[in-house]
Amino acid sequence: MADRLRVDARRNKELLLNAAREVFGKEGTEASLREVARQAGVGIGTLYRHFPTREALLETLLRNGVEQLRDRAGELARTLPPEQALITWLREYVDRSCSYQGLPASVTNALYHRKSDLFTAASAMQAAGAELLARAQEAGAIRTDITANDLFAVVSGVALAVDQMPGGRGYVDRLLSLAMTGLRGRP
Image (cartoon, rainbow, N blue to C red):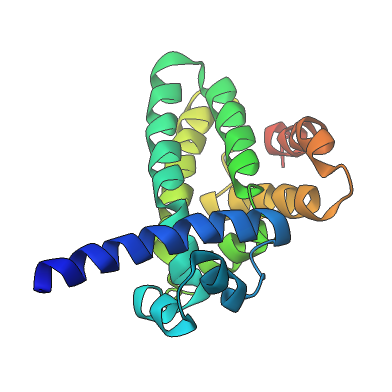
């Protein structure tokens, strides 16, 4: 009997994650959690048993992507010059951050709230970017007075703009290029 419950719980969790991907993909991260549960064919209580907050659901959806971004930072550091590694990673960060409308705001907010269910994921991304930033600074490609917090404020601003602008995805390279100009400049 207990095995059957575990199987049902795993199935329900997977149904909820698939439904959340679909609903968030259409309506953004602020979509109704009742709609997520309805799409999954479960009750709202089942959703909250698996994911007590919206951020917990988002964190689970993002976990794989965060791990990939962290690994990607290491790969880029090994294979590209420091400045190119940083800009490539920042572009990928913006792309992933904009996978659901409203996600850039959720990730940005989580960086400043340690109790957020997304804090660990957001912090892991920031740490990966900070390593690339440090390499680029050591190579003399980026100003040394730029901190990881500064970098993430800028790239979060780009992601927020891309998320909110009609046709925003078409501006990613332009906005990152403008940001990099400021990061390279001398104080």
